[in-house]
Image (tube, rainbow, N blue to C red; front, side, top):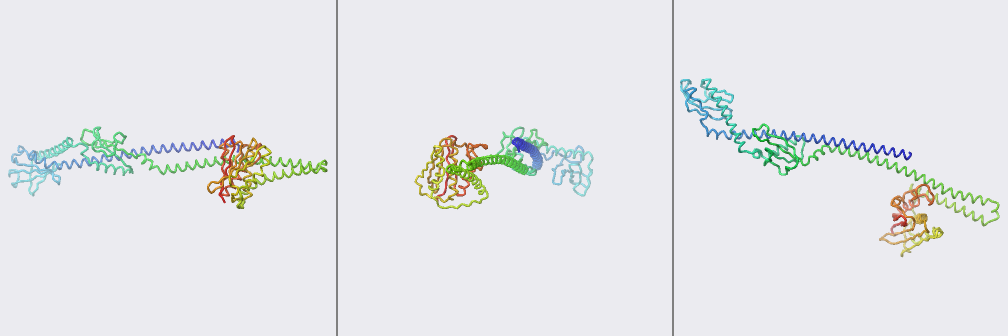
Length: 518
């Protein structure tokens, strides 16, 4: 896949992902608004039902008040509703009225003579609110029609007066705060909210004519917004009464009902994002690996091409008749062939080592070896090359000449050689390389410092990656394949140690190896 195609594909995937997330957010926002509207509607409906329940409670209280007022009113006006003797002179002025009893009747008592009634004596006529009448004994009373209507009118008048009296008295002396009990209102409202599936904590208050009454819950805040519904609409009171409700955890209640949808949405969206990120990362990684491998092949081809060309020239020279009798020159060309052959062998070994490490086929033959001997061996291997460039390698054991480490001699020597060789390669000036050893608790620390070109932070992060080279591309100002330091880190890790690099661009680098003491 070309670079442009990769960018176009990444752009399309990114746009699709962003679009999907935007749609998810939009749908979720709409779902929240719909749920909030339904929640508000359920709260208002519960409050209206609460208002109806409060009207029922108030009606019961009024009936109880009427029952309590009847004996008192009867004692105050015992003869208000006498049967008028003008209608029938034979009905005496000793008539009395008794109030509604448990059977739903008013009772009138009066004396009658034998002119219209037989037999003579006292009688009781029971008249219901609908105007029916009956005798209490087996005798039969014949009331004139006018008298019956008169009795009915007085009964209805009395009932109206009594109700008006009770209500007017209550309106004058009983404010809204005394008409209801705080706990009763709380219980009714809680029951209605729970019927709507709302179990959230709430605060409430009752107001009358714009002023909050004494019926207000402990944590109700008048300055905060609240739900508001008029209650007691069928009341005779002139002042409107409102029920106010606040739900501090309203949004928690809204979101709790949507938790499953939100969780699934987040899981799926996160899954898409992770998949997208992994895909893009793998694409970029594969692209980088492809580029690195391409550079590696080019570098390896160049590394082999040069010694092969040199060997070919040396062979041609050896076959020249002019050198048949010149042993000195023949020995010189033979040495060139040997050196170039060793050079190619070294390159092949680098690749084979990493291949064996990948397959985990390298076995370490660890033994207690003198640390100084290891360092001196690596130093002598490259000292001639350094001196030819006008530099030097300085070793400071700091009293650890007799210190031993438990390592594989062959592989650990290669580690030291690779690091020193890397320092020589990346020193533009005559290389000055210093090797220091010291103890840190139960560890031996080996520091290899140079005066090379140094490394940026980005280079330091990848310096131990396979095939990575500080120089980009397949250029050859510095020989190598990007395997030396990767091999060094792998071997040190297998020894249970660690390797770090400290470097500043233009000031050189320091590689620090830490190993356990033997």
